[in-house]
Length: 329
Image (cartoon, rainbow, N blue to C red; front, top):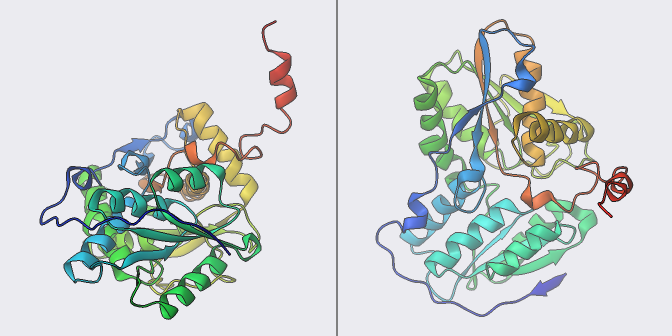
């Protein structure tokens, strides 16, 4: 276990949301056009572009809800630090809003997290505990739990996988936004399963709004996968907020299919998105291809910028030579 430490900060008192907090949510709902051109004209796929949030991902929503709730309940009084495990986006959101609010943040991160994630967290001043990469996010989760038990006076353990503030953020914001933006015409909702917060919160809201709306969960097709942010729940530690009976069905997506779709979205739709967005699109297309009409909505959790060092994702291993060959001399 390797620790990267940073100076202590002082928590500031905020009785009302800061400017950056007010920018969370109300993200655009974008149509997919070219990759859906083979579908019925009475069918649409729309994607919630969550990289428009201040810290760049869908995790801004639960992060600020968790932070604000903890502050209001007096759980983050000095000298306590916020502690959680993360593979990237949630940690970046914590660190962003922690910097704004003056809340010190400690994150337990698998040591194989991408260079971009480590660099962003470093820039934002988060303290990082790097764990065995072979243990993945579940290993980081276990270390975070151990740290929280051993030093209760030092840490407020946010515990995004079990914290109801996670799914409640989506129930309060993402779900209502989708209904408003679609005029209530959504017929199918597709979302990946990581912490399961998005599916649980949005799913509960949509189910109450219209029980006929179909909820489709997305997860990797095997325990060993490259779908960053998603969990193969049959073999992983299940989040406490996960409701297995909520989705109408689950679609499993391979790493290869998701990677290929990420490249298609960039080159055919002009949408430079992350890996979980590719997986969501694969599943959304599978659903749409069985329909003659409907409105399928999915969530694109983040952009592709935190994945630039993933050479396999961008198909650079085989192409780097040809790119060099085209260099002007």
